Length: 200
Image (cartoon, rainbow, N blue to C red; front, side, top):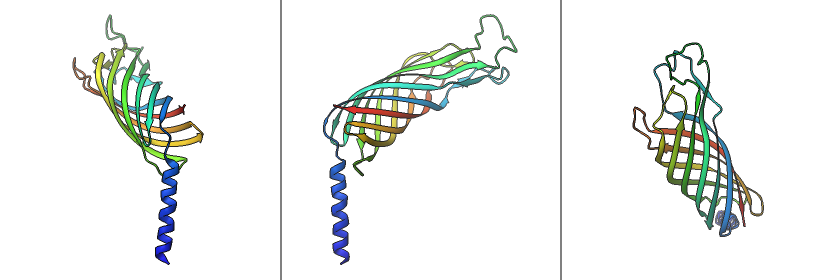
């Protein structure tokens, strides 16, 4: 009896896995998100001037192709990692010192993802990728090596099928930028994001 129950459960799982397989084909995607923690260096006057950075956002557009549970994707993104605009007017360090300003980043990345076939509606995913990131900083309170640098990321999330061909996916990404130099360390950041993908 137990054997029959186990076989029935196994059959149900195999059916669910088969139903969870997405069809092959191209898709487009768009995401919005926020930087929840970024590692970069501050000027020695950061604490004295009570520097603060907020308004951290990012967004991206992507195009990809699905091979059953695997996806490959090309993505372009832009975001503001810091907007230094508070507590910087009490002291003037000297002529030419620009306290207020922002740190922005554009990215051009390629990624490979695996959608874990759990159910037809819910599929966790994991992914890895790399490419180029460009940093632009206008605040002298942030120590950043500007310019274009190599970048790599790891990502995990949950695909949720809404309609045929339309999926939304909350996710987390760790992004690392090889920007060490000029007194600055490599930059890394944690991103929470919400992605919408449309297959056709």
